[in-house]
Amino acid sequence: MTLGARLSAIDEQIADAARAAGRDPGEITRIVVTKFHPASLVRELHALGVREVGENRQQELTAKRALLREGREPALDELRWHFIGQAQTNKAAAIRRDADVVHSVDRERLADALHRAADDPDVLDVLVQVNLTEDQGRGGTSAADAERLAEHVLGLDTLRLRGVMAVAPLDEEPAAAFARLRAVSDGVLRLAPDATWISAGMTGDFVEAIDAGATHLRIGSAITGPRPDRG
Ligand SMILES: *Cc1c(COP(=O)(O)O)cnc(C)c1O
Image (tube, rainbow, N blue to C red; front, side):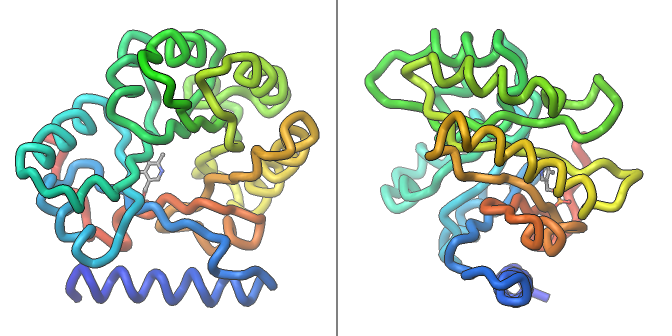
């Protein structure tokens, strides 16, 4: 199957799942995760109409954006780059420069570092990442601490809180995990009625995520094919 065929097949499945859940497919944003793939794939995706792409490592994000800028193709400015990986605080300035949205704000220190890195009047869209596992080593703040972190972000005027993000645990039914994320989202919405985004759902669980109210899906391999070795 070609890239375009895989993209349309997934978009059809997204639309079907949305309708089955009684939702409008138009309220769901599909982000194509391009990590480990070359910048040329991003260009191909753009030609197919993709406008939202996701990367999980700062160096790779920065390198791809630099490479694509060299081509001087103004149309590529239409792309919105979503940073979805665990972020080191000392990379915050580079992430802020190269990403349009950061999904993985999981601690106050990172929010503060992104805030301090602001060097223009632009406001950066961010989501609070919630860890749905028991393993504290995984990215994300605990569900219990998510509202506190959301409040902290709301106090930083160069960041705009858009909602919450999570990855489903490997050892649990995704539906149950996404229901907890939905509850966290409801709590955050009481603090920030505009923070309506729920970033959830990957290749293996986007249907369950749509059922649970996800607004932003992060889909990689089902669209791009298997990832090349990270080397
Ligand atoms: C890689 C990645 C995805 C996409 O994963 P697939 O299973 O390839 O769809 C989504 N979210 C995050 C945080 C990722 O790191």
